[in-house]
Amino acid sequence: MKKYWSFFRMRFLGGLQYRAAAWAGVATQFAWGFLRLLMFRAFYEADAAAFPMELGQIASYIWLQQAFLTAFAVWYFDNDIFESITNGTVAYELARPMSLYSMWFVKNLAIRVSRVSLRCLPVLAVACLLPAPYGLGLPASPKAFICFAVAMLGTLLLVVAFMMLIYIATFYTLSSLGLRIMAAAVCDLLTGALIPLPFLPEELRKIVELTPFAAMENLPLQIYCGSLTGAAMGRAMLLQAFWLIVFIAGGALWMQRSLRRVVVQGG
Image 1: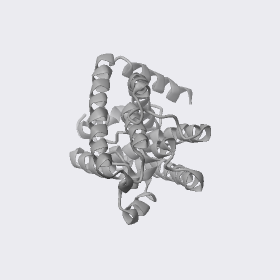
Image 2: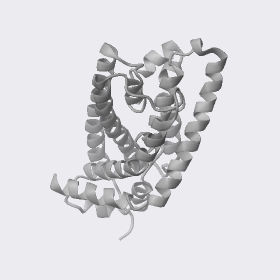
Image 3: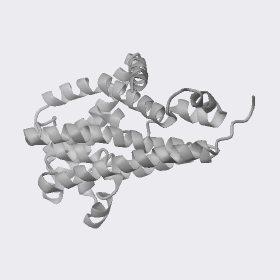
Image 4: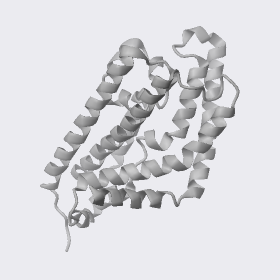
């Protein structure tokens, strides 16, 4: 365990070096946040009663989404891992006295945590100062905030576990590009990155809520906004834990199976 903690700490501190990129990202997230707020405001001015969430809830959803973007983003990949698979340098990783799955998992987790720590506070600070209903509101209750924090941790782990499946699948392909594009497109829609899941047609929403995608970005944001409460919230959090176990256990087993078939060319 100590060696994985050391590896996490090394990657985390390495990620903190990119401060200029973080400030550029913060500026971009402010721009996208305000643009999305203006878009939703136009819809709500036309017919606010037609939507399942209040404008203030949407504003909180958007600002949390922007603040924790690097934790949620399924399109954010570690290119070094893809390159190590395609060019054969993964052989050096296999020589380490560590589980390759655990090492890559910790690496991705550390990078995402470091990026979030650099970007979230400025976004949250400004969002809290904006007037209602355009700013970040308070959580629905203290209980909701605790559940939000737990769900956020589960989301971070689940996103990394899903990314691990994409990395492992690259062992069976000549290029990772198709997998990356397909994963990003599907996840942007089904995780609530484009629109909150309550805005989907009811029959489609019920199906999506059973998938692991609804347990990613959608779950903690809906809890914070107060649009997911009570027994429904409890069931959603249990489902998130279920998918997390399935993804990690399945990914680790798939990694072991894939490494038995790895062929590294050259000397």
